[in-house]
Image (cartoon, rainbow over the protein chains, first blue to last red):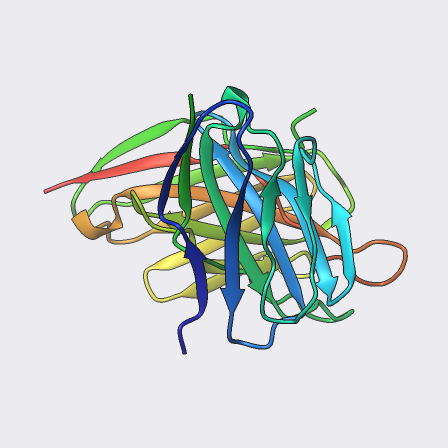
Length: 116
Length: 116
């Protein structure tokens, strides 16, 4: 069981470049999400998905696109990178919550992105 | 508007003593609370959780207390060990009108340092 994997670990972009951060999980989790972590800001939700073909915006979605074509993969796309997107990005997944329980999210190791 | 607040950016304790990390929330719809631990260059890992129907949950050296009337929860680590040195995030989830909600709202984190 690899859990949640993210690639690449590090990336440097120039302003205006595009790229895709990859996220995959092998736990058959329905819920997947992307967060960014900035100093003094905690973890902020960018986009999330509750299943293949279903995505929605989180707290800070501007400048990012997502799609979910399979249960396993949830890539995050930066269409035109900006210095404000310099951050550490975490992907997380979990089973869906039921009315009587909450299933904790499992996080990947992160991608450290620098936009010059 | 910060719905989950961790007002202490850092905390330093001696090995063997108790560590108490605090978290306040404003959204009365939150009904499930979690603590995550994060080491540098790694993703957050789930530590312990508590449902709003309880006021205490214990797991080994870790205990979480919930005071709903004060909208306050705390994480106690007894005894503290140098390996506990990490950033601790408080997170909360609210059950929406549809009966389920998967999104987590995180605090900004508290850096715990346990000195040998």
